[in-house]
Each structure stands twice: as C-alpha cells, then as structure tokens.
Image (cartoon, rainbow, N blue to C red; front, side, top):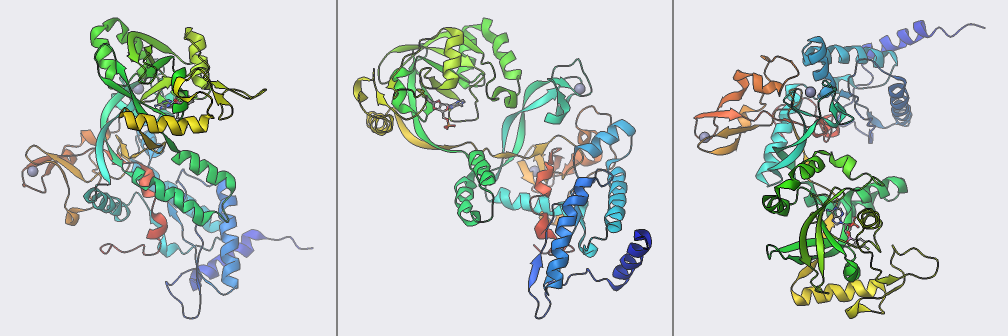
Length: 510
Ligand code: ANZ
Ligand code: ZN
Ligand code: ZN
C-alpha cells in the first residue's frame, strides 16, 4: 500500500486551484442560485489553533458541497484585527501594533492556504485598514444624525498608576495587570454610546422569525439579555428632604411588606445624605469601587449602609429606614428598590444580615416557598384575600389613580458604550471646538486616520501623545479644534463585516 503523501498531493492541487482561480466568486452567475457561507472572521493572534481548523473545516465542507450541487458559492475570509493584544504587544515588545498585526495575518493566511480552504481571497478584508474603518466612521455619522449616537458619563476601570482606563481583562483581583499592588478604581468619564435600546422590542419580535432553527437555549439567553420586565414605578416620600423617591418594582402586590428602602451608592440622593453625614463617605466610596459585574453576582454577600434617614410608604403610610446597598444597581430601573424580605430572596438575605423586619404579606400554599406568585395576600389592608396577580392589578390601578406612580416597562438591555481610551481601534470622527462644541468630521475627510507619531509606554491613552492627531481644524468654523481621542470598541468592526464581503473594494458608494 502506498502512503498518502499529503505534502506532495495537496501542494499540487492547491497550486492548480490557485492558478485557475477557481474560488473567485462573481456576484451573479447565470442560471446559478447564490449561496453565502459565512464563518466568523478570526482575530489575528499569530497562528491558527485547532479550534480554527475545526471551525473553518465545517464551513469549507458546506461550501464545497453546495458548489458541487450547482450553487454560486461565496465563502470569504477576513481579519478582526483591531484590539487590545496588539497594543499590549506594542507596550511589552515595542513593536507597532500595525506591524505585529500584519505579520500575524500573513502567517495565519499562509496556514489557512495550507489547509486548502476554498476562500475567495480577492474579497479578503481587514478591519485595521483605513479602507475598512472609514465605514465605521461613516456609520457613526449617519447614526449620530439620527440621534442614535450620544455621549454620557459612565464608569470605567481606572489605574491611578497607569493613568489609564483598563479593560475588564486587565483587572486581576481588583488590581492593575501592570501594577499588582495598585487598586483599580471606578472613575466617571464622558463616553460615546449607541442607542441600541431603541431596538429592544424589535429584537424581541425578531425571535419569531428565527424560532425554527435556533436552539431554544440561545433564544432564552437572548431574551434574558434583553430582559423586558413589566412593573410599576412608584414614589416614597423622604422625610428629611420631603422629596419623592421613585422605586421600580415588579411586585407592587407586596407593598405592605416593604420594611426598608434601598438605593445604589451612585444614586443622586446619596450626595445629599453625605452632605449631612460626611462620616459615611468612605464606606460609600468603597462600595462604588467594587466593579459592577462583581456587585451583581448571584449569591454574593450583600453590604449595606444605614443612612439614618426615613421614607414614608405611600400606601401604608408607615415610616421605614433608607439604606444604601451594593446589590442595587444604578443603571437598572430607578436605582432604588423597596426591600421586601419576606418575598424576595436578595432582600431576605440582606434583612437577615442587618436585622431588618421581615413582614409576610403572602400566605403561600402548603409546602411552597413564599417567593413566587401562588397564595393569597395577608397583612395588606386594601388587597387582603386577593391572589398576588390580582393584587398587582388592583394596586397598579390604585397607584395610578392616586397619582403616586405608573405602570412601566423596563429593559435590562443597556445602550452600548463603544468608547475605548485606546490607540488600536477606529478613531471616533468627532472634534471639540471652543466655539461650536462637539462636531463631526466632514464625510469627505473620512477616514480620520490613526497617527503614527505615538509612543507606547503603557501610560495614558496613546492617542493623547500625538500632537498631529489632537490638533485639528473645526469642520464648522475652520478654527482650531481638538480631535476626540476615543476609539471604537472592536465589536463595531465585526457588526457589519458580512456585508462588506459583498462589495469589499468599494471606496465611495454606501
Ligand atoms: C419589590 C419586590 C418584592 C421585588 C418581591 C421583587 C420581589 P426584574 O424582574 O429583573 O425586572 N430591582 C429593581 N430595580 C433594581 C436595581 N436597580 N437593582 C437591583 N434590584 C432592583 O426585577 C425587578 C425587581 O428587582 C424589582 O421588584 C426590585 O425588587 C428589584 F417580592 O421590588 B422588587
Ligand atoms: Zn497600572
Ligand atoms: Zn468650530
């Protein structure tokens, strides 16, 4: 038996395929139906691993099968080539991210070719090239014009030694990856956002269209991520300031069981409390410095601070204490929660830890826990005897009639923070002019190119070190303006690459 000499045989055929250019795909071929096989584009880390080989083999098998079945098959390949590793390599080894990235791409492309995959290499794209990222900037402008891009303050991980923002991956046990003794703190910065929450309902409705074919598990994950939630927003009066403090609750039926009210440490009322009681400042600051992912982890021990203030329950008129706690997040609902320890598991753990009253207002059926919707209301003057679902309905109406609140819908989905204080990404095409404020670069001046006069020291945002980049001309008044030094999250690049393959060389038309 002769051995299969793959080196010889594969080389021979791969050369012939290349010579005959058999994987080139025309947009339209007479009499053939189009078929698009899209594998996710890789990050050019340096060399292929077995996961790549597996993944891209599957796509290639489908492509070849469809081609043999007579389809006009498009199977493209490209490079998701902005991002942190290239910048870290620059900091650690002094190589420019572009050089590191380019040589990684060359090597991985050589390896993909050795595998004999049937890609149309004429359509190859790479997101780090200006001809690609120009369009990120163009999309940014179109969305800005439609009010789908905006700026707001939000929290970032900050290393005081690096004087820079850190990605979550660069925070190890609450310390900086480069400074193992330095605590990473949460700092507020102005950042750019895409208003994806405008599409929350449309995303949910879209599930109908992909129901057949997508695994149930994936759809559930998507649903939870969008997190549509029906509830009531209603206000408690703060005794000390006489202001109304709104909470968001999905269980307005349990209002008679509220034994404390609790706000996030970032809640605006906390500033007023600290002004009266500065002794709480340090505890509040410590709470704010815990990162949000950790704070919302399930089962984590909950920490609270008693403010000494009181609020009035708008239904029972009872006075209950106002607390600050880490398990309440500012970016969901109103950042304030009525604590019902008898019927909510998190509130229950919190109340037990701090000895707060636990008042049952639902009698659950024999053998059932009290955290669900079964049973009937007790200790609840206006709604006694009702089922919790009926009580939600009745209390919802009451709250609206009394004018102390309203039914609302909230989403877990957040707007997408796309700002990165990094070099290796698409420059945000915005400028700041003393006269005109924040303005966007003109279309005809796109792309706004990444500058080359940069030093990668690891300190600060590298773009801030380029005078050439920072000092620019205002597109509105022609005066001096400072270019925005944020770059875009690399997920912006990979949000539309599948479209670019269809017309990969187009430099003008949108
Ligand atoms: C009182 C209550 C009683 C609640 C009860 C639940 C059970 P979903 O379903 O995810 O929307 N909540 C509201 N805002 C919050 C925030 N910013 N951070 C942490 N928790 C928050 O969850 C809604 C419930 O989560 C709300 O209903 C509120 O607790 C809490 F027996 O209000 B509930
Ligand atoms: Zn550091
Ligand atoms: Zn101007």
